[in-house]
Image 1: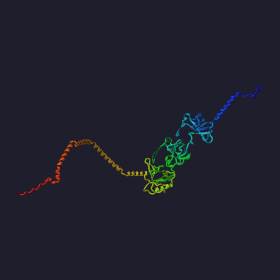
Image 2 (image 1 turned 60 degrees about the vertical axis):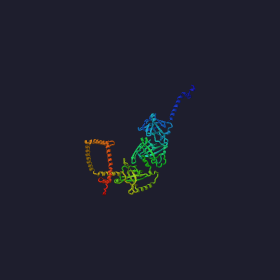
Image 3 (image 1 turned 45 degrees about the horizontal axis):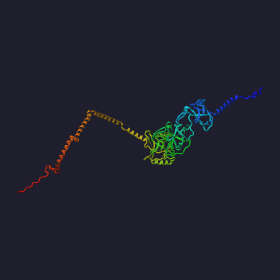
Image 4 (image 1 turned 90 degrees about the horizontal axis):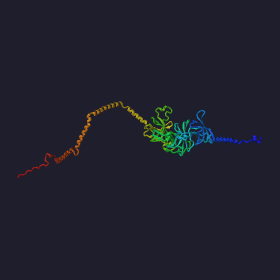
Length: 536
């Protein structure tokens, strides 16, 4: 037996090297595949519209970082679960602040987005989180998340319920678009809307502490005591509304600059925003003896056509404790004078204003309701000086507020009373007798009309125009004969010449009679007396 045939000393054949190398290569490929794979995460969303397993990609900044491997329903069938295989080195993107949303064609107030997915199909966008704990399960948002950072200014607005402001609505400064609404939510506990807006650079310098924000719509109409007003904004605001801001009173001093997350109040309109700009005010109460129909909150308080305040509440404390106010008690109206509308100063001396108003009231300053618009019946409060009015002072109060003296001069109610008195006087007239007399007069008029009609139908009257025409022609012929060159003219001319010769011949006789009226009886020159002659 050959010692070399010992199995312990037998060598491994080279043929076995080939499968060994294949196994090593396979292990290397498996290791490379596993090392190139990232974590597996789960996404939850309402439905899987546009999502396809093995095809739908997960991207960030248009770079693919994962792919959807499986699409299933949740155990309670209330939502969809997506299993996503992420690529290597994506663990640092995944934490509690990471956000996912589906990118697909969308049409909204911000415009049209996601058109690139019409041919390629929907995909899932990933917004990496910066801080937070590691996470494996995420909820997919229905729309892109709210912007948290940007090259501009982020502000917060608070508004009452009923606001129609939504994400993407434009924010404008004097009709110039300078930003947009990035977040809107309703606080059920406080019953208010909270908005977050973004102002782009370089327009962020337009915002100051004196700025005021108000809601705008595409087309606005207003018909009140100030007349008819129409407002037309941009097409974008026409489709979805928006927000505008400015310092409503250009004469007011601009406040200091604001920082991110500074909070403002969102007002209903520009006039409300302007009123909010005047922080130093004087409140008074008017005790109106007549009807206040047509007087609304926000109506102007004017002095000689200049607005100096606003009506704050109509009525105020009416029926506050009992039905006492339903008797003959006057109706209280709360007005607010705004001296800053006149002075355009941030700070004023309110005690001095009260003192000077007291002196003006002693001098005859009174408040009255006047009609601002005859079509709508809107009223406003007018402050004017009146003569021969009882002396008054700011001493009386109503629920702790000074009473401003008022009169009913020039009010619409007084005009209505005058019309009522006129109608009452008309009702006292003997209308029945007047009607009977009018009927008799109408009967007589009918008789006269019939007689005139019979007269017009008389044939003789119908021939009258022809007879008048014939007479006029005859008269015209007669007048024509007396014209220059006619027979009548020549005869008249000859007669006048004979008359002239006759007058010429009679002129000496007339002169003689004028000098010696008895010339027709006696001789003009008497004969001389005969002298007797002597005897020869």
